[in-house]
Length: 291
Image (cartoon, rainbow, N blue to C red; front, side):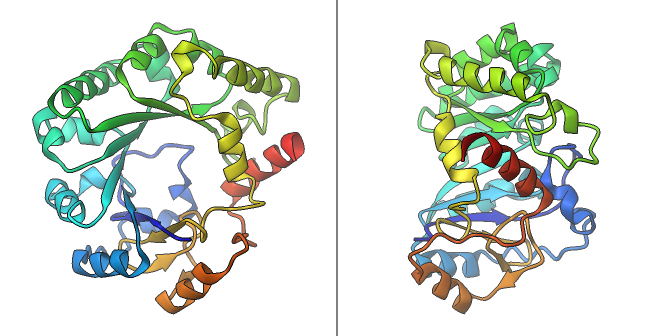
């Protein structure tokens, strides 16, 4: 049953991360998509479909001018989880963030920032600490891409410090196209034995104290194999122009509310027949190793 919504309020972003699936629709990232931000329609949609959580995403949500106001309005009818690349912490002080009605903040931190304990990393961690002191109910989560630098990350002082600050570390296999310069640093592109060592270490450390808040790897794998894709079963995506997609990775297939009702009634999992390259890379890796 669909009960969670990813609302991409903008495709605009202040960064251009090589691992971001935004590159699949470069034209929209370059501001060619209308941003309606019709919260009245969003509210009616949420109530009609019994949506419990709204993931406010982008692009980068913090590029819009009235983010705090938007979040607080959405929070009046659903739980809000905010995704940010870190711009949120540059644009707002910790008191302003703590006053936003957010259940959780998820941010992706680049591996070199953790390893080198960069200024950007330190600013985010200090903001996290201050926000949590001001609003104990707000959870802060960090997403980390798994690649060749995995062991450099987990053995770094930055990772140890981060583990004492955040509520949860979310591990995600880095997925890019074969044409990407990053391809051979990914689990999909690296030597299979090397990838297996990383996977086994993750499983082992998942029992350890420092990794106690990390998403169970088997849960991640079960949800991303494509065999039982959760897009269209639990999640639905709403775009900046308030149109609907089943999957945020494939944005050229817009569906109507009527079609969504039919999908929601089906008992079998929705399986996307048109994997984006990002999905395909991850799917092929997981299929080869775990299916």
